[in-house]
Amino acid sequence: MSRLWSAVVHDLTPYVPGEQPKLANLVKLNTNENPYGPSPKVLEALRAELGDSLRLYPDPLSDRLRQAIAARHEVTAANVFVGNGSDEVLAHTFQSLLKHVAPVLFPDITYSFYPVYCRLYGIEYREIALTDAFEIDVDDYLQPNGGIIFPNPNAPTARQLAQSEIERLLQANANSVVVIDEAYVDFGGVSAVPLVPRYPNLLVTHTLSKSCSLAGLRVGYAIGHPDLIEALNRVKDSFNSYPLDRFAQAGGVAAMEDQAYIEGTWRKVIESRERLVADLEKLDFDVVPSTANFVFAHHPRRAGGDLAAQLRERGIVVRNFQKPARIAPYLRITVGTDAQCDALVGALHEILSESAASSPSSALS
Ligand SMILES: Cc1ncc(COP(=O)(O)O)c(C=O)c1O
Image (tube, rainbow, N blue to C red; front, top):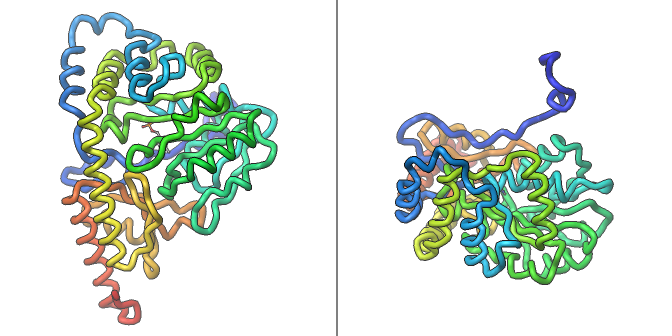
């Protein structure tokens, strides 16, 4: 530990992103990327941006992009904030809207960046246990708080909270901001964005990383009442006036405008997910119902960490979280192409058959 570090840095436990392995021919099912490439119109827009204009700073307000996002969601540009990936949007949200005397509430099993932001910004937080079926029980959130945040569908569980329950939460918490992180909503979930005009305490965050196949471009956004957006802009302009470069803005606009292409990738992912779930169930896995582009599953007779390690030996990467203990048995598996899912299922079949052969009492059913 360096004596030159500030006290804040000494106390940080940074978020650990899923591995981006440098190995070739890997079946990469660990960070919930979209298995299909971005829209050809995005690639065209990026090529058009490559030129002399790069000597100029980008638009600090990302006006065209905010307008394109507003048009897609049928809101106004004044309802839209954009950032360098939704991680940056979330970071600014924690600092500008969730830092109060009362603790911010989020589920005990959720996106593991949330507690990291709290520690970075000195925000009190309380983790609320999900039910045994990994569901959010809104009654548990009816207590004094400085804000509420969770992904819907939740990550890594993939479970979705019903719209009527979100409304109940918004009504019961009129004096705090409720943030719904919709990183995965486009793969079959129901968005809370249509509730924005009725609830000034609602902020919905989205990312182009998964739904638009643009994890490499780093574009995320939030939709909410203009007062919430102003708070985010105040933090942004106290941090970095140009978080989205010229490529991100141009590519983001093209992605928003090519709805037909991105919806086609969502449909393919949803179909592959249903197929993958059926195949995993045939191998005896318990699969949590998913409306996301990943599934959360465990095998009754095999440890999650062991399965993940054995898959990796076969060139397939999935994610296993050892904490909290009740999710240690689970694998979080990104839905890939059908060919990638088949490779995963084939490898799991092999692994489970080998262990069944060495221990007849745990034979595969
Ligand atoms: C729930 C959730 N929110 C937000 C993000 C961040 O997405 P990005 O920063 O790529 O927009 C992720 C990424 O995995 C996520 O799982």
